Length: 194
Image (cartoon, rainbow, N blue to C red; front, side, top):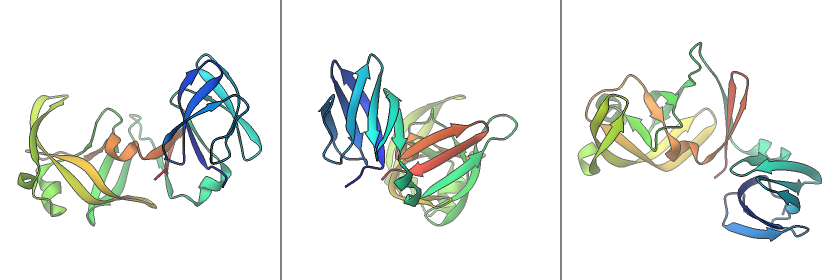
């Protein structure tokens, strides 16, 4: 099996800790291959070189690479607005939503009216307080049955429902951490990992 997605998690002298195709973490030595066939060619402080599908690729800790086979994985490309924000139309539980990509948000965050349109009862969630730019806000943690953005579709995604309405739905890390994110100028491409 040839890997399509490699994430460098950590480095030790002569070894690297990697996650391949969203699986378990694997420790691999220089010159060895993972069970999926990704070879660690070399490593230096902060970076490593891997051989994926016959090509050598350099990664820093926390970075990921997606080989050409990943073209089969669902993806969508967003373009930043004049303020540098990535906004996009998508849906939650089949209800149309306007998303704002927010890497600073732990979960997808939606307002009361959006939750109602998506048939979410926040009172069935876990109550809590979220620290927002405007100070503390009362929220309920819930699971979203489905979240769709372009060709990407995820299920069972953690979210928070705010007590008040919000102008957009914040697309936080509970969605984004399941993506490979690539930026190129004003474009951001999200490719579904798992």
